[in-house]
Length: 180
Image (tube, rainbow, N blue to C red):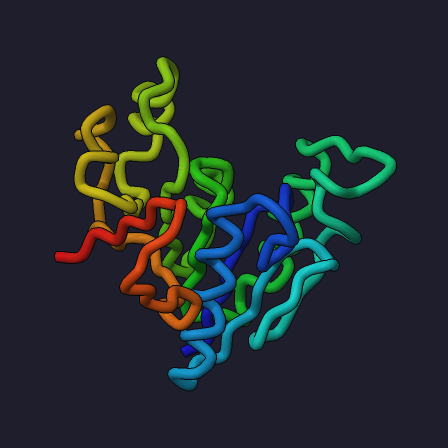
């Protein structure tokens, strides 16, 4: 399958410092590639991936200097995917609602994983404008503020368990993994 993954431009994929969404996107892309899918990652130019990187902006916005206007960068990101939309069987956006308007204009199926807060006051009105846009939650409880959204499913954030070595003595930290 030919899959486009659209990452936020705030951090590189994977992130050099902070970046939960970008880290999850990195693991997802790498695993899809290992399963034999053709994956193109639309992200900042300082990203690394096992898929094909389509660099949209030279550097991640948070670490880039001089500082870039995030609205301009996001517009460039959406235009980049629009230019290549015919190359993909499916588009997976990680931009929250920012790609909804573009996705509603194309035939290529698009799904959006919502990584951020959904309890913001204007979101119900915005989601009402896109009643058929499929979205994925990262937990069942995340859905509570937007029950009217078109929930396609819940996919919990991944973790590379190879990075978590069991230590029977413990340490001065708290690690918590919830599994169903």
